[in-house]
Length: 317
Image (cartoon, rainbow, N blue to C red; front, side):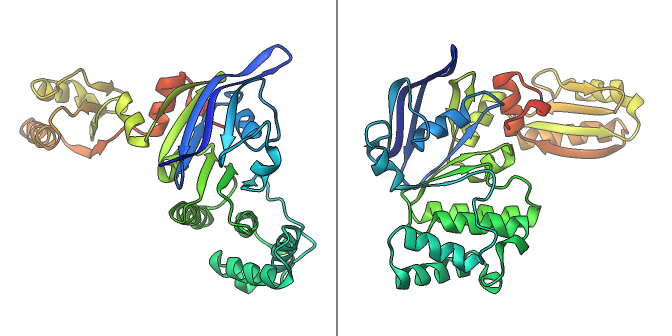
């Protein structure tokens, strides 16, 4: 597929600080790219350049086939941006917000009203269409904000923390709509502080650290770099951890991780189901009571921690 978003050796400096240090990105049409990184990693600067809000100091960036520095007006006419906070006129109704944007984009009065109705129904806002936006819940505002971005059917949609502050139900509705946009051929660039959101939505993920790309791949490819699956075992009696380790000694392909106080053991799974069955049988023969016995795969939390050395409290933000 052709690249709709592309950067090569993208650089940006602020008062002697190098915010971007040669960032290369390639985003094919109709895919979702997740940008991850801790505070100051370069996510916001990258998106600022791609949306023509900032000029790069080196390298180049193209969006929808146009150079962001030399052809900013062409780029702006083909993108839409939903920031962390919904950019809506709260003194207008949901319908009025959409119709106004259509007219500003020169769709004409009739087409603007038609497009507004399509989007209101698609985003489940029909019943609230004539209410002032100031009465909308956070989830409704986020959905309306995303609808506003789609009035002109952009080639690229930039989403900055799209589900920040939403309840699980509203977040799921938003995720469903992002997936639908990608299926419709819109390319999505997503920055998020929720690693599970990137896992759910992104076809590929780029991890930024100190202005440079330190990892790139599908969620599964990144997880595979951390390691394979683990079997989590919790004992009913924590003091029996040594006995459990002895029973599992001939099964473990590598040293297990042990929490003696909590009575928990994490056993590397070398042979998948065979290891699981052997571990269950060994613990049963040893007469050890187990309260939890579950397979655990690496998460993007594990990936982020491994790649950046940041704790969960320093996750992407």
